[in-house]
Length: 185
Length: 193
Image (cartoon, rainbow over all chains, first blue to last red; front, side, top):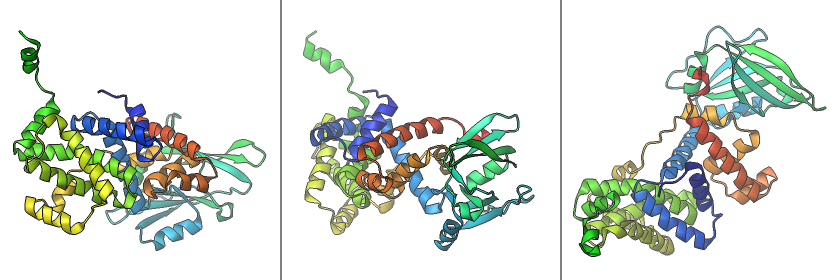
């Protein structure tokens, strides 16, 4: 009754989302309940954990990673507790805002001219030049003159302790991809 | 030794032992049965009912299971999971989700709202870790995941909103779930030295 987790997650997703036929669903239910009682349905815990954590991200406002200026005001108006950090052309301010327990998310405004940009990706590089991660397809409004990153307060605290370089890749209307900015923190 | 007597010497699977203990009045075993079955009941409810009623349904089903256990209506411990599924199917068929009935049963069997919510295991996924992984998905994948788990949209609604087919939504979600699960097994990016 041991299952490989990813195929099991796919089968569970198809069942929950109504993709399986009724006969398949009836058979799947029999197997799922038997495995659950036997403690051999780990895909249930994985899906349940993802679902509840995404709901928590929605509640604290961190489900929207990239905002426009208008979106920031809507977030604040919704009652989400927002701390703000505004970079200048020279980089981030010396002091981080207080991210105490009364803060849900940190919204960081980074000034950058994105007129003519079709797509924006942000690559995070550590102090030794090693790639840490890429955040693809940043949402933005070119009229804002800035991007607004929205980050869970706890994640912001972790990220704030790490010195990194954020490399902003822009793909313009002609398809040309280039580094528009390198932002040290 | 006959095959029957040999079979009698084979130890029953642990879940059958657990079910037998629950059926003999062991409350700790009964609680463990509910804890294990809760996510399966919720998955059942997610398929069979509207998302907004799935949580209520799952709790109703577990109250009825506890009732059946304590009334000794389940004679065969090897059939406990099937019995629980039968409860779910009947409940779904009847849509018998009466708050008053639930309250009366809870009162009779000494169950509280806290008991019912405590059957759910706390999520082992930390919010900041999931956000870190979620940020590495493409915009379309983020939209599918957000609309699935946070907005409770069905696949036809998601497909319409994104201008893609429902089959494509399904494929994107499957790939995204696998990517998120794999990412969550690694340390958070910011401390990945």
